[in-house]
Length: 282
Image 1 (spheres, one colour):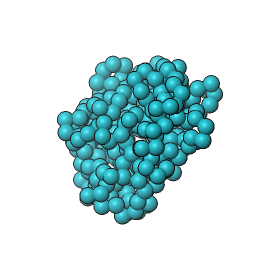
Image 2: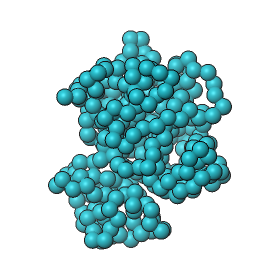
Image 3: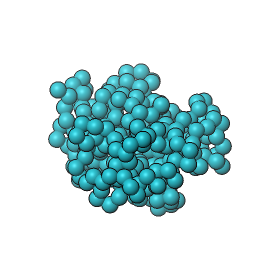
Image 4: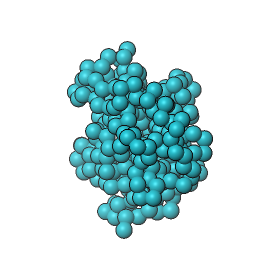
């Protein structure tokens, strides 16, 4: 299944993508108020699949897609998780994942503009795979980690590089309003299947600027989940963004920054295509 959060006629709702339509389960009487609440139900996938059959239908093209999970308890991001990106940054090899955080209000959905803030022109792209937790846990083992995933989505961890480098902490450059994109939908693991051969690509104005196999990650998904669940309890709806490959704009000569009017796309095989335009902050 493919889950979406969307707005229609000024009302936020959620549902399941079915071809060119959305089964708008959130419109049904008594339905969970959000996708996150739906995932918290006992036997969530069975309950959602049963509701899908009788849910009202909306054309997918008629709604505004929002971040897949607009209300996560936490968003954990992995930095420097592809070898070619680690090398282009000049960072040393590490024994543990590099983790930083994003705030939920820094995100937009597929098709919505990403905002270059007026205090900087150093707006960089970072195509990434995101996962959403579907089963909570603490001290999750690597062997059990994949069973805690509700699904996968595309992510653009848009970064304000000069603010990111004010200190050794990444937080300021990763949390300007409207700088991260998350979508277009959440795809269940059974539809994605094994990562072997699956490719992530970032395009800026139609030109490929990043490309890697998902299996090129330094720390794989089970390792990331096990590590994060050791220092924090992972809750249903939590988002983990798993890192970007080499080719970021900051490390090009000359640097390649996103600007108003640009179109940026993140495409991941069997996951989806996330597309956003860039606008300047008013």
